[in-house]
Amino acid sequence: MTMYGQDSAPVLEALEKMKRQRLVPFDVPGHKRGRGNPELRDFLGEKCLDVDVNSMKMLDNLCHPVSVIREAERLAAEAFGAAHAFFMVGGTTSAVQAMVLTACKRGDKIILPRNVHRSVINAMILCGALPVYVNPEMDKTLGISLGMKPDEVARAIRENPDARAVFVNNPTYYGICSDIRAIADMAHRHGMLLLADEAHGTHFYFHDGLPTAAMAAGADMAACSMHKSGGSLTQSSLLLLGDRVSEGYVHQIVNLTQTTSASYLLMVSLDISRRSLALHGREIFEKVIGLVGYARDEINAIGDYYAYSRELVDGGAIADFDVTKLSIFTRPVGLAGIEVYDLLRDEYDIQTEFGDIANLLAYVSVGDRPKDIERLVAALSEIRRNYRKDRSGMLEAEYINPRVICGPQEAFYAPKRSLPLAETAGQVVSEFVMCYPPGIPILAPGELITPEILEYIRYAKKKGCSMTGPEDMDIERLNVMEGRD
Image (cartoon, rainbow, N blue to C red; front, side, top):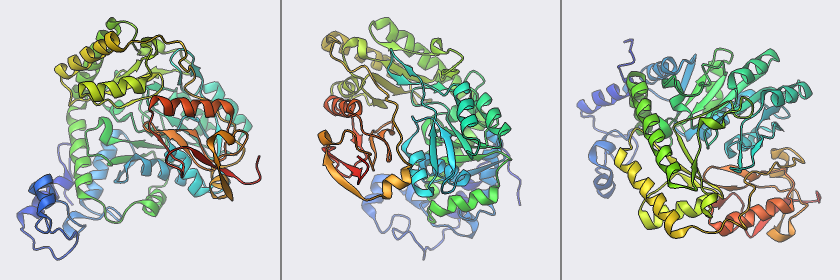
Protein backbone atom coordinates (compact mmCIF):
# COMPACT_ATOMS: atom_id res chain seq x y z
CA MET A 1 0.00 0.00 0.00
CA THR A 2 1.09 3.56 -0.69
CA MET A 3 2.46 5.25 2.42
CA TYR A 4 0.93 8.65 2.87
CA GLY A 5 2.45 11.69 4.57
CA GLN A 6 0.71 14.56 6.35
CA ASP A 7 0.53 16.47 3.06
CA SER A 8 -1.73 13.72 1.69
CA ALA A 9 -5.48 13.17 2.08
CA PRO A 10 -6.15 9.49 1.28
CA VAL A 11 -9.95 9.65 1.34
CA LEU A 12 -9.98 12.79 -0.80
CA GLU A 13 -7.62 11.24 -3.31
CA ALA A 14 -9.72 8.07 -3.53
CA LEU A 15 -12.89 10.08 -4.13
CA GLU A 16 -11.19 12.12 -6.84
CA LYS A 17 -10.02 8.90 -8.52
CA MET A 18 -13.55 7.47 -8.34
CA LYS A 19 -14.97 10.59 -10.02
CA ARG A 20 -12.51 10.26 -12.89
CA GLN A 21 -13.69 6.70 -13.53
CA ARG A 22 -17.25 7.85 -14.35
CA LEU A 23 -18.84 4.82 -12.68
CA VAL A 24 -22.44 3.89 -13.50
CA PRO A 25 -24.10 3.61 -10.04
CA PHE A 26 -26.32 0.61 -9.41
CA ASP A 27 -25.91 1.00 -5.65
CA VAL A 28 -27.21 3.34 -2.95
CA PRO A 29 -27.80 6.21 -2.28
CA GLY A 30 -30.81 6.36 -4.54
CA HIS A 31 -30.32 9.95 -5.66
CA LYS A 32 -27.62 8.56 -8.01
CA ARG A 33 -25.13 11.44 -7.81
CA GLY A 34 -28.01 13.91 -7.65
CA ARG A 35 -29.73 12.95 -10.88
CA GLY A 36 -32.69 11.49 -9.01
CA ASN A 37 -33.20 14.57 -6.86
CA PRO A 38 -32.61 17.73 -8.92
CA GLU A 39 -33.90 20.04 -6.20
CA LEU A 40 -31.37 18.67 -3.70
CA ARG A 41 -28.62 18.82 -6.36
CA ASP A 42 -29.45 22.46 -7.12
CA PHE A 43 -29.33 23.35 -3.43
CA LEU A 44 -26.18 21.46 -2.44
CA GLY A 45 -24.38 21.45 -5.76
CA GLU A 46 -23.33 18.70 -8.12
CA LYS A 47 -19.82 18.46 -6.64
CA CYS A 48 -21.29 17.61 -3.27
CA LEU A 49 -23.71 14.94 -4.47
CA ASP A 50 -21.10 13.40 -6.77
CA VAL A 51 -19.21 12.21 -3.69
CA ASP A 52 -22.21 11.34 -1.50
CA VAL A 53 -21.62 7.68 -2.22
CA ASN A 54 -21.74 4.28 -0.59
CA SER A 55 -18.74 2.24 0.54
CA MET A 56 -17.04 0.40 -2.31
CA LYS A 57 -13.72 -1.36 -2.78
CA MET A 58 -11.73 1.69 -3.88
CA LEU A 59 -13.20 3.84 -1.08
CA ASP A 60 -12.82 1.37 1.81
CA ASN A 61 -15.41 0.86 4.56
CA LEU A 62 -15.49 2.69 7.90
CA CYS A 63 -16.82 -0.39 9.71
CA HIS A 64 -13.77 -2.41 8.65
CA PRO A 65 -11.15 -0.08 7.16
CA VAL A 66 -8.26 -1.75 5.36
CA SER A 67 -7.06 0.82 2.83
CA VAL A 68 -7.65 4.57 2.38
CA ILE A 69 -9.75 5.11 5.52
CA ARG A 70 -7.24 3.17 7.58
CA GLU A 71 -4.45 5.33 6.17
CA ALA A 72 -6.42 8.51 6.84
CA GLU A 73 -6.98 7.38 10.45
CA ARG A 74 -3.27 6.60 10.79
CA LEU A 75 -2.40 10.12 9.64
CA ALA A 76 -4.91 11.58 12.10
CA ALA A 77 -3.36 9.59 14.94
CA GLU A 78 0.09 10.81 13.94
CA ALA A 79 -1.06 14.44 13.74
CA PHE A 80 -2.68 14.29 17.19
CA GLY A 81 0.03 12.26 18.90
CA ALA A 82 -2.25 9.26 19.46
CA ALA A 83 -1.65 5.52 19.11
CA HIS A 84 -4.77 5.24 16.95
CA ALA A 85 -7.61 7.46 15.70
CA PHE A 86 -11.11 6.54 14.61
CA PHE A 87 -13.15 8.64 12.20
CA MET A 88 -16.53 9.22 13.85
CA VAL A 89 -19.57 10.23 11.81
CA GLY A 90 -22.05 10.45 14.70
CA GLY A 91 -20.51 13.56 16.20
CA THR A 92 -18.47 13.73 19.37
CA THR A 93 -21.51 12.32 21.15
CA SER A 94 -20.73 8.94 19.58
CA ALA A 95 -17.04 9.28 20.46
CA VAL A 96 -17.82 10.11 24.10
CA GLN A 97 -20.22 7.19 24.33
CA ALA A 98 -17.63 4.85 22.84
CA MET A 99 -15.13 5.93 25.52
CA VAL A 100 -17.52 5.19 28.39
CA LEU A 101 -18.76 1.93 26.85
CA THR A 102 -15.14 0.81 26.39
CA ALA A 103 -14.16 1.56 29.97
CA CYS A 104 -17.27 0.44 31.83
CA LYS A 105 -19.85 -2.31 32.01
CA ARG A 106 -22.90 -2.65 34.24
CA GLY A 107 -22.16 -1.76 37.85
CA ASP A 108 -18.72 -0.27 37.15
CA LYS A 109 -17.96 3.12 38.68
CA ILE A 110 -16.64 6.08 36.71
CA ILE A 111 -15.28 9.23 38.41
CA LEU A 112 -16.35 12.40 36.62
CA PRO A 113 -17.38 16.02 37.08
CA ARG A 114 -21.13 16.61 37.11
CA ASN A 115 -20.88 19.34 34.44
CA VAL A 116 -20.45 16.77 31.68
CA HIS A 117 -22.29 16.71 28.37
CA ARG A 118 -25.45 14.61 28.37
CA SER A 119 -23.74 12.09 26.06
CA VAL A 120 -21.71 10.86 29.05
CA ILE A 121 -24.82 10.19 31.12
CA ASN A 122 -26.54 8.68 28.08
CA ALA A 123 -23.63 6.21 27.86
CA MET A 124 -24.14 5.29 31.53
CA ILE A 125 -27.81 4.63 30.79
CA LEU A 126 -26.75 2.30 27.97
CA CYS A 127 -24.09 0.33 29.85
CA GLY A 128 -25.26 0.60 33.46
CA ALA A 129 -22.16 2.34 34.80
CA LEU A 130 -22.47 4.23 38.08
CA PRO A 131 -21.30 7.86 38.38
CA VAL A 132 -19.04 9.05 41.17
CA TYR A 133 -19.29 12.80 40.84
CA VAL A 134 -16.50 15.18 41.76
CA ASN A 135 -18.70 18.23 42.08
CA PRO A 136 -16.83 21.13 40.47
CA GLU A 137 -16.27 24.34 42.33
CA MET A 138 -18.28 27.38 41.35
CA ASP A 139 -17.02 30.81 40.41
CA LYS A 140 -19.47 32.77 42.55
CA THR A 141 -19.05 35.93 40.47
CA LEU A 142 -19.43 34.41 37.02
CA GLY A 143 -21.83 31.72 38.15
CA ILE A 144 -20.06 28.99 36.19
CA SER A 145 -18.75 25.57 37.13
CA LEU A 146 -14.98 25.19 37.10
CA GLY A 147 -12.64 22.23 36.74
CA MET A 148 -11.88 19.32 39.05
CA LYS A 149 -9.28 19.96 41.75
CA PRO A 150 -6.62 17.23 41.76
CA ASP A 151 -7.05 16.70 45.51
CA GLU A 152 -10.79 16.18 45.03
CA VAL A 153 -10.08 13.60 42.33
CA ALA A 154 -7.56 11.94 44.65
CA ARG A 155 -10.21 11.75 47.38
CA ALA A 156 -12.72 10.20 44.96
CA ILE A 157 -10.12 7.62 43.90
CA ARG A 158 -9.31 6.77 47.55
CA GLU A 159 -13.00 6.33 48.35
CA ASN A 160 -13.69 4.37 45.15
CA PRO A 161 -10.59 2.28 44.44
CA ASP A 162 -12.71 -0.05 42.28
CA ALA A 163 -13.61 2.70 39.78
CA ARG A 164 -12.66 1.85 36.21
CA ALA A 165 -12.00 5.31 34.80
CA VAL A 166 -11.73 9.04 35.46
CA PHE A 167 -13.43 11.40 33.00
CA VAL A 168 -12.28 14.99 32.40
CA ASN A 169 -13.62 17.93 30.36
CA ASN A 170 -10.69 19.48 28.46
CA PRO A 171 -11.87 22.27 28.35
CA THR A 172 -15.37 23.09 29.59
CA TYR A 173 -17.74 24.98 27.33
CA TYR A 174 -16.51 28.21 28.90
CA GLY A 175 -12.81 27.39 28.39
CA ILE A 176 -11.89 26.19 31.91
CA CYS A 177 -9.27 23.42 32.10
CA SER A 178 -8.48 21.02 34.94
CA ASP A 179 -4.93 19.81 35.57
CA ILE A 180 -5.36 16.91 33.17
CA ARG A 181 -1.75 15.75 33.41
CA ALA A 182 -1.91 15.37 37.20
CA ILE A 183 -5.31 13.67 36.99
CA ALA A 184 -4.06 11.25 34.32
CA ASP A 185 -1.07 10.34 36.49
CA MET A 186 -3.36 9.68 39.48
CA ALA A 187 -5.73 7.54 37.44
CA HIS A 188 -2.91 5.43 36.02
CA ARG A 189 -1.28 4.90 39.43
CA HIS A 190 -4.54 3.30 40.54
CA GLY A 191 -5.11 1.21 37.42
CA MET A 192 -7.83 3.46 36.00
CA LEU A 193 -8.25 4.84 32.51
CA LEU A 194 -8.28 8.59 31.84
CA LEU A 195 -10.99 9.66 29.38
CA ALA A 196 -11.17 13.21 28.01
CA ASP A 197 -14.03 15.07 26.40
CA GLU A 198 -12.18 17.43 24.04
CA ALA A 199 -15.26 18.51 22.10
CA HIS A 200 -13.96 22.06 22.47
CA GLY A 201 -10.24 21.31 22.52
CA THR A 202 -9.22 20.09 19.07
CA HIS A 203 -6.97 23.15 18.65
CA PHE A 204 -4.93 22.30 21.78
CA TYR A 205 -2.89 19.86 19.68
CA PHE A 206 -1.59 22.48 17.28
CA HIS A 207 -0.36 25.47 19.29
CA ASP A 208 2.01 25.51 22.25
CA GLY A 209 0.36 28.64 23.69
CA LEU A 210 -2.82 26.70 24.42
CA PRO A 211 -3.65 24.34 27.31
CA THR A 212 -2.26 20.81 27.42
CA ALA A 213 -3.97 18.40 25.02
CA ALA A 214 -5.27 15.12 26.40
CA MET A 215 -2.98 12.84 24.42
CA ALA A 216 0.06 14.88 25.43
CA ALA A 217 -1.07 14.57 29.06
CA GLY A 218 -1.20 10.78 28.85
CA ALA A 219 -4.95 10.29 28.39
CA ASP A 220 -6.09 6.84 27.29
CA MET A 221 -8.95 8.09 25.12
CA ALA A 222 -10.07 11.50 23.90
CA ALA A 223 -13.10 12.64 21.90
CA CYS A 224 -12.33 15.60 19.61
CA SER A 225 -14.94 17.67 17.80
CA MET A 226 -13.11 18.35 14.57
CA HIS A 227 -16.21 20.16 13.32
CA LYS A 228 -15.91 22.79 16.06
CA SER A 229 -12.44 24.31 16.02
CA GLY A 230 -10.95 21.89 13.45
CA GLY A 231 -12.90 23.04 10.41
CA SER A 232 -14.60 19.80 9.31
CA LEU A 233 -18.29 19.30 8.58
CA THR A 234 -20.87 19.23 11.36
CA GLN A 235 -21.21 15.75 12.91
CA SER A 236 -17.66 14.66 12.06
CA SER A 237 -15.33 13.88 14.94
CA LEU A 238 -12.26 11.91 16.02
CA LEU A 239 -11.84 9.34 18.74
CA LEU A 240 -8.19 9.21 19.83
CA LEU A 241 -6.60 6.29 21.67
CA GLY A 242 -3.47 5.90 23.77
CA ASP A 243 -1.50 2.66 23.89
CA ARG A 244 -3.16 1.37 27.09
CA VAL A 245 -6.42 0.44 25.34
CA SER A 246 -7.06 -2.24 22.74
CA GLU A 247 -7.70 -0.77 19.31
CA GLY A 248 -9.57 -3.92 18.28
CA TYR A 249 -11.91 -3.83 21.29
CA VAL A 250 -12.63 -0.13 20.86
CA HIS A 251 -13.38 -0.79 17.19
CA GLN A 252 -15.99 -3.36 18.27
CA ILE A 253 -17.50 -0.86 20.71
CA VAL A 254 -17.63 1.88 18.06
CA ASN A 255 -19.42 -0.49 15.68
CA LEU A 256 -22.14 -1.17 18.28
CA THR A 257 -23.61 2.28 17.72
CA GLN A 258 -22.01 3.87 14.66
CA THR A 259 -23.82 3.76 11.32
CA THR A 260 -22.91 1.19 8.68
CA SER A 261 -23.65 3.85 6.04
CA ALA A 262 -20.92 6.34 6.86
CA SER A 263 -21.06 9.61 4.94
CA TYR A 264 -18.06 10.20 2.71
CA LEU A 265 -18.81 13.92 2.92
CA LEU A 266 -18.08 13.74 6.65
CA MET A 267 -15.06 11.49 6.27
CA VAL A 268 -13.42 13.53 3.52
CA SER A 269 -13.97 16.66 5.59
CA LEU A 270 -12.07 15.00 8.45
CA ASP A 271 -9.30 14.01 6.07
CA ILE A 272 -8.93 17.47 4.52
CA SER A 273 -9.18 19.25 7.90
CA ARG A 274 -6.58 16.98 9.49
CA ARG A 275 -4.20 17.80 6.64
CA SER A 276 -4.83 21.52 7.08
CA LEU A 277 -4.20 21.37 10.83
CA ALA A 278 -1.11 19.18 10.50
CA LEU A 279 0.46 21.52 7.95
CA HIS A 280 -0.82 24.93 9.10
CA GLY A 281 -2.34 24.45 12.57
CA ARG A 282 0.01 26.73 14.45
CA GLU A 283 -0.49 29.57 12.00
CA ILE A 284 -4.28 29.04 12.03
CA PHE A 285 -4.61 29.17 15.81
CA GLU A 286 -2.11 31.99 16.20
CA LYS A 287 -4.57 34.04 14.15
CA VAL A 288 -7.54 32.90 16.28
CA ILE A 289 -5.71 33.74 19.52
CA GLY A 290 -4.98 37.22 18.16
CA LEU A 291 -8.58 37.82 17.06
CA VAL A 292 -10.00 36.73 20.41
CA GLY A 293 -7.44 38.75 22.36
CA TYR A 294 -8.38 41.85 20.37
CA ALA A 295 -12.10 41.18 20.87
CA ARG A 296 -11.64 40.60 24.59
CA ASP A 297 -9.80 43.91 25.05
CA GLU A 298 -12.40 45.83 23.06
CA ILE A 299 -15.34 44.26 24.91
CA ASN A 300 -13.80 44.91 28.32
CA ALA A 301 -13.27 48.54 27.29
CA ILE A 302 -17.02 48.96 26.71
CA GLY A 303 -17.77 48.76 30.42
CA ASP A 304 -19.88 46.33 32.52
CA TYR A 305 -19.23 43.31 30.28
CA TYR A 306 -16.42 41.04 31.43
CA ALA A 307 -14.67 38.91 28.80
CA TYR A 308 -12.54 36.67 30.99
CA SER A 309 -9.27 34.90 30.31
CA ARG A 310 -6.18 33.47 32.01
CA GLU A 311 -6.40 35.89 34.93
CA LEU A 312 -8.85 33.32 36.37
CA VAL A 313 -6.16 30.62 36.61
CA ASP A 314 -5.64 29.66 40.26
CA GLY A 315 -3.67 26.42 40.06
CA GLY A 316 -6.58 24.48 41.54
CA ALA A 317 -10.04 24.26 39.99
CA ILE A 318 -8.78 26.42 37.12
CA ALA A 319 -5.46 24.97 36.00
CA ASP A 320 -5.56 26.79 32.67
CA PHE A 321 -7.88 28.71 30.37
CA ASP A 322 -8.44 28.35 26.63
CA VAL A 323 -7.61 31.81 25.29
CA THR A 324 -9.47 31.11 22.04
CA LYS A 325 -12.72 31.17 24.02
CA LEU A 326 -14.60 34.47 23.91
CA SER A 327 -16.68 33.93 27.04
CA ILE A 328 -18.46 37.08 28.22
CA PHE A 329 -20.09 37.69 31.60
CA THR A 330 -23.19 39.81 30.94
CA ARG A 331 -24.92 40.12 34.32
CA PRO A 332 -23.40 43.57 35.17
CA VAL A 333 -25.32 44.94 32.15
CA GLY A 334 -28.51 43.73 33.85
CA LEU A 335 -29.08 41.18 31.08
CA ALA A 336 -28.85 37.41 31.08
CA GLY A 337 -26.48 35.93 28.53
CA ILE A 338 -29.45 34.45 26.69
CA GLU A 339 -31.05 37.92 26.47
CA VAL A 340 -27.90 39.34 24.87
CA TYR A 341 -27.80 36.28 22.58
CA ASP A 342 -31.39 36.98 21.46
CA LEU A 343 -30.74 40.69 20.92
CA LEU A 344 -27.63 40.00 18.83
CA ARG A 345 -29.54 37.56 16.65
CA ASP A 346 -32.85 39.44 16.35
CA GLU A 347 -31.64 43.04 16.17
CA TYR A 348 -28.11 42.78 14.74
CA ASP A 349 -28.12 39.58 12.64
CA ILE A 350 -25.26 38.16 14.69
CA GLN A 351 -25.50 34.47 15.64
CA THR A 352 -23.41 33.61 18.69
CA GLU A 353 -22.82 30.13 20.04
CA PHE A 354 -24.96 30.26 23.16
CA GLY A 355 -26.20 32.32 26.07
CA ASP A 356 -27.18 31.13 29.53
CA ILE A 357 -28.46 33.10 32.51
CA ALA A 358 -25.20 34.99 33.05
CA ASN A 359 -22.78 34.39 30.18
CA LEU A 360 -22.50 34.64 26.41
CA LEU A 361 -20.13 32.59 24.25
CA ALA A 362 -19.06 33.87 20.83
CA TYR A 363 -17.19 31.13 18.97
CA VAL A 364 -14.26 32.55 17.02
CA SER A 365 -12.37 30.49 14.43
CA VAL A 366 -10.01 30.88 11.50
CA GLY A 367 -13.07 31.66 9.38
CA ASP A 368 -13.63 34.97 11.17
CA ARG A 369 -12.31 38.35 10.05
CA PRO A 370 -11.38 41.49 11.99
CA LYS A 371 -14.43 43.27 10.55
CA ASP A 372 -16.66 40.50 12.02
CA ILE A 373 -15.12 41.15 15.44
CA GLU A 374 -15.70 44.90 15.02
CA ARG A 375 -19.35 44.27 14.23
CA LEU A 376 -19.80 42.12 17.33
CA VAL A 377 -18.09 44.67 19.58
CA ALA A 378 -20.17 47.53 18.16
CA ALA A 379 -23.38 45.56 18.68
CA LEU A 380 -22.49 44.72 22.29
CA SER A 381 -21.74 48.38 22.95
CA GLU A 382 -25.10 49.42 21.50
CA ILE A 383 -26.93 46.75 23.51
CA ARG A 384 -25.37 48.11 26.69
CA ARG A 385 -26.35 51.64 25.76
CA ASN A 386 -29.93 50.82 24.72
CA TYR A 387 -30.97 47.86 26.86
CA ARG A 388 -29.00 48.15 30.11
CA LYS A 389 -31.09 47.29 33.20
CA ASP A 390 -30.83 47.28 36.97
CA ARG A 391 -29.29 43.89 37.78
CA SER A 392 -31.22 43.46 41.06
CA GLY A 393 -33.46 40.42 41.05
CA MET A 394 -31.22 38.42 38.71
CA LEU A 395 -30.66 34.83 39.72
CA GLU A 396 -27.09 34.36 40.86
CA ALA A 397 -26.65 30.57 40.70
CA GLU A 398 -25.65 29.01 37.40
CA TYR A 399 -24.65 25.50 38.44
CA ILE A 400 -26.28 23.49 41.23
CA ASN A 401 -24.62 20.41 42.66
CA PRO A 402 -27.14 17.56 42.40
CA ARG A 403 -27.86 14.82 44.91
CA VAL A 404 -27.61 11.41 43.22
CA ILE A 405 -30.12 8.89 44.59
CA CYS A 406 -29.51 6.04 42.14
CA GLY A 407 -27.72 5.24 38.89
CA PRO A 408 -28.89 6.75 35.58
CA GLN A 409 -29.81 3.38 34.02
CA GLU A 410 -31.95 2.30 36.98
CA ALA A 411 -33.79 5.63 37.02
CA PHE A 412 -34.30 5.88 33.26
CA TYR A 413 -35.85 2.41 32.93
CA ALA A 414 -37.74 2.37 36.25
CA PRO A 415 -41.55 2.60 36.51
CA LYS A 416 -42.38 6.30 36.39
CA ARG A 417 -45.19 8.80 36.62
CA SER A 418 -45.64 12.27 35.21
CA LEU A 419 -46.15 15.19 37.60
CA PRO A 420 -46.65 18.93 37.10
CA LEU A 421 -43.30 20.70 37.54
CA ALA A 422 -44.48 22.45 40.73
CA GLU A 423 -45.26 19.11 42.41
CA THR A 424 -41.93 17.39 41.77
CA ALA A 425 -39.81 18.72 44.67
CA GLY A 426 -38.53 15.80 46.71
CA GLN A 427 -39.00 13.32 43.85
CA VAL A 428 -36.29 11.45 41.93
CA VAL A 429 -36.22 12.47 38.27
CA SER A 430 -36.17 9.75 35.59
CA GLU A 431 -35.33 11.95 32.60
CA PHE A 432 -33.08 14.88 31.64
CA VAL A 433 -33.62 18.60 31.90
CA MET A 434 -30.99 20.85 30.32
CA CYS A 435 -30.33 24.03 28.43
CA TYR A 436 -29.02 23.26 24.95
CA PRO A 437 -26.44 24.35 24.12
CA PRO A 438 -24.30 23.49 26.02
CA GLY A 439 -26.13 20.24 26.82
CA ILE A 440 -25.00 19.98 30.45
CA PRO A 441 -27.94 18.55 32.41
CA ILE A 442 -29.59 20.59 35.14
CA LEU A 443 -31.16 17.30 36.16
CA ALA A 444 -30.16 13.80 35.05
CA PRO A 445 -31.96 10.50 35.70
CA GLY A 446 -31.57 9.35 39.29
CA GLU A 447 -31.14 12.81 40.85
CA LEU A 448 -33.23 14.49 43.53
CA ILE A 449 -35.45 17.38 42.44
CA THR A 450 -35.07 20.29 44.87
CA PRO A 451 -36.87 23.64 45.19
CA GLU A 452 -33.59 25.36 44.21
CA ILE A 453 -33.38 23.37 40.97
CA LEU A 454 -37.04 24.08 40.16
CA GLU A 455 -36.42 27.81 40.69
CA TYR A 456 -33.49 27.63 38.28
CA ILE A 457 -35.57 25.81 35.64
CA ARG A 458 -38.38 28.37 35.87
CA TYR A 459 -35.93 31.27 35.69
CA ALA A 460 -34.07 29.81 32.69
CA LYS A 461 -37.39 29.25 30.88
CA LYS A 462 -38.49 32.80 31.64
CA LYS A 463 -35.25 34.24 30.27
CA GLY A 464 -35.64 32.27 27.04
CA CYS A 465 -33.07 29.48 27.43
CA SER A 466 -33.71 26.57 25.05
CA MET A 467 -34.79 23.83 27.44
CA THR A 468 -34.64 20.22 26.27
CA GLY A 469 -34.71 16.68 27.61
CA PRO A 470 -38.09 15.81 29.11
CA GLU A 471 -40.81 13.82 27.39
CA ASP A 472 -42.99 16.92 27.83
CA MET A 473 -41.32 19.34 25.43
CA ASP A 474 -43.03 22.34 27.08
CA ILE A 475 -41.24 21.48 30.36
CA GLU A 476 -44.52 21.80 32.26
CA ARG A 477 -44.30 18.25 33.63
CA LEU A 478 -41.50 15.88 34.62
CA ASN A 479 -41.29 12.10 34.81
CA VAL A 480 -40.28 10.87 38.26
CA MET A 481 -39.56 7.40 39.65
CA GLU A 482 -42.45 5.56 41.25
CA GLY A 483 -42.13 4.92 44.97
CA ARG A 484 -38.95 7.02 45.53
CA ASP A 485 -40.53 10.09 47.20
